[in-house]
Image (cartoon, rainbow, N blue to C red; front, side, top):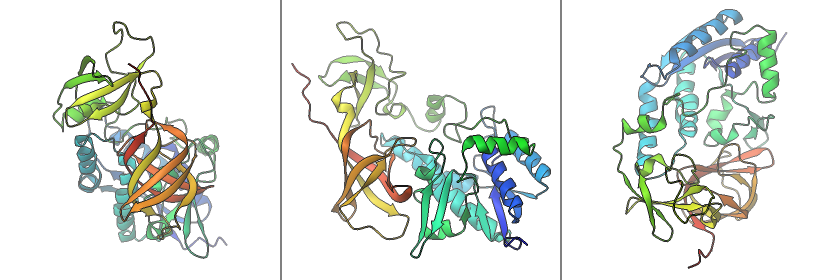
Length: 369
């Protein structure tokens, strides 16, 4: 008899293939499986897929013969995720709401609700794994390096990981699709969702302008030459190439223009052409690092880090500057390191934790005269 037969698990069922296969695998393993569909955003317009996702979740549960519960976390999402999202954009930074959604919604509000429903454990369709050793529960990368989502889970605590299962963490995406097809799950061919969940397919600028007033200003080169006008600093991120509207400048090189810097005090967007050294840095500063083990490692720490999702691991050294400030020095220069995003630390497959990028030091360079 399967040892899991008395363990109740509630799966976060999004209406996608990953969570569908997670539910399938748990049922095959002998768990008592139920599903919970979350609504995290109130708008249900042409851009929001909530109704379609809910229908797909229902169809999957019918196929697997498991119960489906519904819960509305829109208020919690607004308070814990969206207000931070807006505040960061007001500060000219580029936030990552997916990290906060995992931290406060999927592994906090969801976990609490699942426990109220009688669950022993919760499960999510993330490409990640956990391993328990003598001292702690470690968060490991998913086996599919192209889909690994440990970056988005780096703020989780030991208490949260203790309650969580990641059924597809050992699988490749292609295997997940094959399992869904082999068991005739309605989501087997459904495309993966992309972008920020509450924006959907709509234009980002149009969405953001509904909540924050845009303040147009000048676009300038590092030498102070005015090239045009930007629509609002919040619409641009470091390293951005598309949507600048300054092509075909007289006496300019043929190389593309990139966003190099935001001068918040003057509401000026600084741009440069080609792979400008100002796009690169060896050093960033981060504050209040969250360590998944619950204990800070001995510093300085030689490890690897990512400054964005899907980036390959980058060798670095972490040192402490003050009680709430840390310095990360990379072996090779990093492109377009963006304040407001997260730097996440790794040793081999283990995700150690991470913190918000506060600032960077640009490479020394000379633009000439």
